[in-house]
Image (cartoon, rainbow, N blue to C red; front, side, top):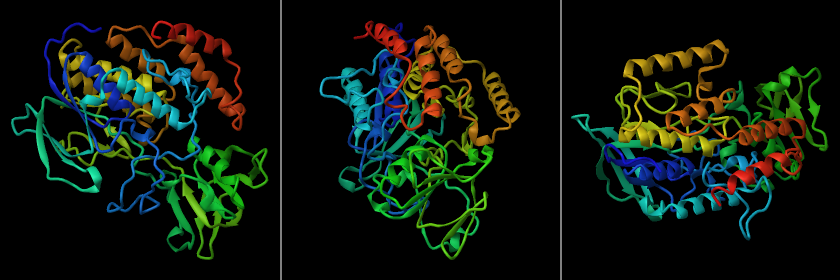
Length: 449
């Protein structure tokens, strides 16, 4: 357990998903007072499945009814459960649970619910409460959180509470990014984002085009192919293939193409490989935008081309540190251990036990990170993509907190799972070659079980 804090603060956490729960636990462990605001009726954030979808299937209309979950009914994890869990709270098989190594979303939610119960986090959460605005007081010493009760679909009166600091954990899977398609305005078919995909039945006997190469694009294309007439995947990476389109092995109605060149009034969609497909639906599996509609920082923090910044180590805005922080922004990572380590760091910094560099040094570090992204030739929206150095980042966080590096077996398991996804995309969730790492993981878990 951490040493007693040098100062005990009254802190707000926005969101009770995995990041918010990790933050609440670590802040509480550090001795801070914690209030978690959650607009839903339960913990779990994006892992809370709902069959409901938004009134605008593309997710562009700001007046739409917003659904925060992006889960589809058939979703299973794309990481093995042993590597997914929090460092000191293993994600093991429980009685009457999903015993698969790559379990369904219900099992992940159950794990998060158990985590919240184990550490008494539920009593810190104000359910059915939407954060309307977060801003600094005029004297800039405190933070004002304006919130309202939204239980039962009715919005109550705005209320205000003052805090020493705010930790933003509102997730980044509810504001869709959409691909630009020339001519799509006059194309007569239906467009939607994967955020609003739940089940394949609505696509029975239809021709569906899916844009993207992410895990959701792979999963949804296979899910829909069971009932659709044809499924065509527009994949930027496919441009490296010599012959296009390519039929996916094991399917008679699933093809991979290059990107879309244009859509036409007659209902056809033209791919860059020259193929023309009359289509009923275009589904954008194109990711999400970071969005903080409640946050007012007078321009200190902004979202530019899906880069949230400036943020020191993806967490602290140098000019507002340490009293404003963000947990869970990085992607292409194992999220739960990462948000756990970020939360430990934030909690220690807020209590004064861990020191940050000067504002100027933090800003210089941010500039250096931006330069690395530029030198790689990556677009700015890849700033929070830690695919190449997530464990280096995790280990840096651990060092700041006086903890050992992330376990070697977890790192090796992540690499093995990534290779398996590429070599056997249809079966990697049920076939693997790293039982020795599973054995090592369970030996490690015995410390906590």
